[in-house]
Length: 596
Image (cartoon, rainbow, N blue to C red; front, side, top):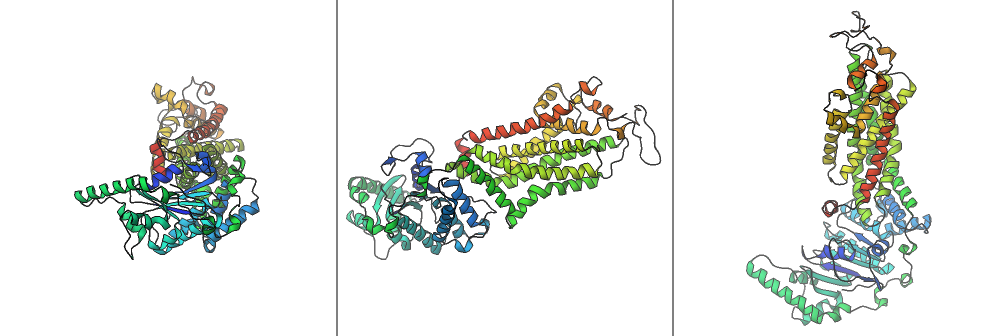
């Protein structure tokens, strides 16, 4: 098959005929072994060349909710057009694409509020904006009404002729009104070519081999039915299969002339001044730094836009944690300084760990999913790879998570009147942030292979529950753990976060020294340990009941600054692990899950 600049080729066939497979082979996306050669401008079309000079629009495109149409196109231009192209030229290119695709009237609309036709045109626009020399579209009129189908095909035809570009698209049900917009057509049946060539020669070819198209019949649909296997009965199946095999062999023998037929350039070009215009893809790709800055900027743009999606993102990322911790504070206020408060403070630390971990998983599962889906599509197009995506996620989440966790932790710390030292408050906030970030990146890692946000959240929650129950020291004392479980807990951040938070609160806390048995009028002082009444002499005594040691804090697992530092080591480790995971090629069955 051949297609020339300024032409629109339609690949037609029934379901299972190989339309999508053909486009994926041309676009170097097909999995498994392929044979043959694809030539673009006398150069073998490699994957790198296709990603740099061409575009591919799949049937289903996931755009980022929260961005407007103009912002979506602008960020797409910044991600795909080289650094040598000025910002003003990129803005002009976005304006031109919106005009060509009739998107000016919805330029300030949020993408999730678009109609199906507008959404489809925007999906086409994010590929056209980089000015590819060839663009492949997998059924761009899928689920569109006849009027919008005509509109989309006419736009693509105008783009091909106006800019002297190649457009190849697939369709299942071509209507007669789009026939004038198609310069070439390829009929497929079970992966075999029944006809490929100019639409002007379509009727002549089939008429010459004894299959003339009846008058008042849609030739595109008529010959599509001719190329489709009839499975209604066994006899019809055998008959139609035999006929299609004969048509395939016939075209191999007599189709060379029709396949190579090409209209003069002057007949196909509308604007001759664009014939030799250099495409924007010729100016190279943007630098990694530009791509990283664009990804970060795109995320913050979603956060600070004035629409419902932005408000939801802002609420989840910034406000949810402080509000939830305020509710926790209401259940614990006030915490008095008597024997029962040892368990109350332990419960407060447990609830802080649980709340930070669970809310982190919830927030990540909801807010990360659209970016994850968009990443899989953009990385497949070669725009950027996993490490840049992870860096942008880290830089975006860092200030928001610090602000949210600090505000939430301050509500608890100040309201419950925990150990009143600013250094202990700061380290309390920092430790909870490390737990938040650990849970966040654990959920991100799970979402690499689990498509459902809900399933990712539930899976992450179950894992976090095991961590907290057996390693934090707030549910079960580490001295009571089986020996093998005790050593396994060394590999969990909650061992160090729990130990640090408890030591931060209980160690050398003068308010808990010989705390009374009861609060109020009936107060029994506790100078020593009194079984059944005064269990803990002071905070250090309480800690030594929970962590192995030889009666001394220094000999136990409560190494204050080491535990604090190891929490940050785990965070850094999760950053590195996620970056490596996003760098390793995923198995084919996982890729297919996110592509279909």
